[in-house]
Image (cartoon, rainbow, N blue to C red):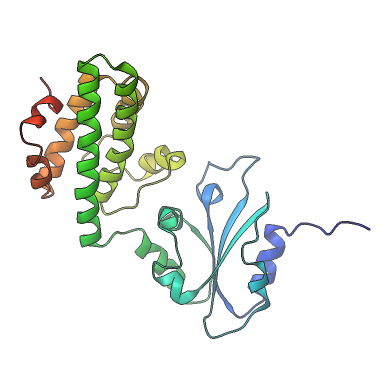
Amino acid sequence: MTAPKALTYDAFVALATADPAVVGLVLKGSRAHQGMTTEHSDHDLYVVLDDDRETNLSRFAGHRTTELDLVIVGLHEFRGTSGVPGFDRYALARGRVVLDRLDGGIARILAGKALLRIEEAFQGADKWLDAYSNSLYRSVKNARDGHAFACRLDAADSIRFLFELLFALDRRPRPFNKYLEWELARFPLPGWDSAELLDAADRISATGDVSTRRRLFAKVEAAARRAGHGAVLDAWGEDLHLMRPQ
């Protein structure tokens, strides 16, 4: 007996397009990022369904192969947050609309996911600023006390929190590491030189260089205070002196 053929992306898109219950198709991942596709790239596709219609396509929920990964979700869930995991917010923000039966409604939903709410962004920036400061402080202390390995680990942690912070300050979801250079090359963070920022992040992650971290912290502190997050920094008291340029 011949094994059934695996469902291809093109075949599924044809099925979905012919089904009136499907109101939107959104391609995310490397195939939605120009220049990022490789021979190993699959197709990650969100399938958005009309909540008031029935469809046989629901049988493909959870479908996952090396060719095609499907997420099938109702329109109400897709509009909100319960149907979209937080880690997918950036992916959808840069997703490519394949089908939009809502006269641009799917595209507007994606645009909404690309912009954090004001309060959401402010609270997130508070949290990430404190986490960044904590990792930076621990890393500099470890360097001072001769714990080189711990210094580099904490330095690498601080870079993760730094990018969460900087994107929150711009009310944007943070990209996956894979797309960080891609994102900053096309959509720079206001007030930051993308090449310089990435170079500093690379050097800090690799070596834990203290002088680079302190210079970077000075810029971060200024940006955070301008955005109204001074209270988070002030809570560190005299420990700030260890983080600042000497």
